[in-house]
View 1: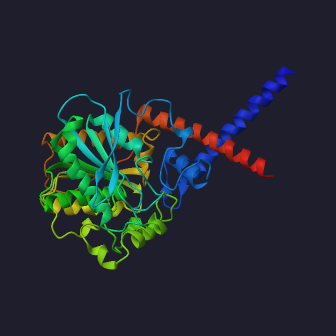
View 2: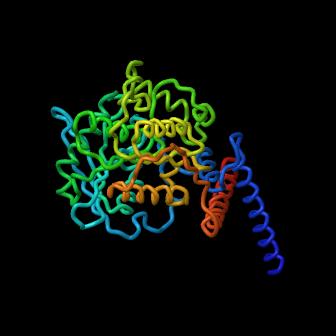
View 3: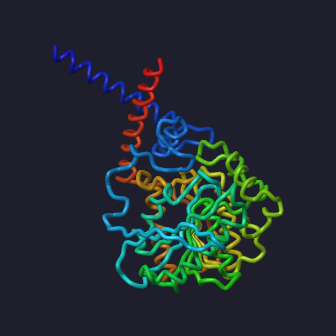
Length: 389
């Protein structure tokens, strides 16, 4: 009897494995091309409501490994507020992992489409914490005010006030006020780029770098291939959300031309700090981020632009389970280290480097993890169908 039972179990396991492999392969095939297995399973989980996500990108609990996101380093976090006008204060969070003095300072602006409910310090804390741990920097991040209650230029003003506050108070947290960089993702990448411009224009803190993760660089109607190809929302950013952001954050059309909303169209980009721009292959914002890098280069600003192939908008938020996201953060930390030492120079030609993904053992582990996640999703989908009958 037990032999029959064992055979039944073996047959079931083999059938389930075949179904899992077939499913992951199917999820990987899209009209825009074949996705890496890890990207495919994450997108399938999100787009088929098999994991609990808010409207912003955050890592599902079952996808998060047990290992610390902070590389085993003890974090010190301080919540405070800064004045942002008469009788108005905005929350600011300060992260620090090192007890050394005169550490570099990073002012980080979280993404979220400039809209209430689409992003916050909490939804982006994993990126901010990890960047602090990998760089040894003091990272200061504001909860800037967003639309629809606050339209442009409130977010820009809050972002710049945070930079000025960092210049005055960084030393209290072990940071060097003479060594500040700005960074951000998506809408926050826009604010980081704009804050760098505003600091130049208004004689603010002298920045040593700007780090832009898949930034939005224009609110204008520009014909970019990536906007037309990847705007369905399947790749975690839709045309609908982009139009909503424009309608509520920049409700007046003349705002779209302002260099502090659309840095891509700024007449003068000279004198800005060295930049590293990271874009994703399957992202509506890909082309405008890379075009902004080209314009910075033409203005003789040192710039490194890297496209991560096989990734979607917001992929760095998944660095805990995506090797590409982990590499993006590591390479960003390396860039900031070199930039703080003045070792990033302007090149003769502008190129967009492309990273195709991991190889060797790392690739094998990515595939194995993708199949494990795929098996979970197949099982959960089957269970949901059974329960709904």
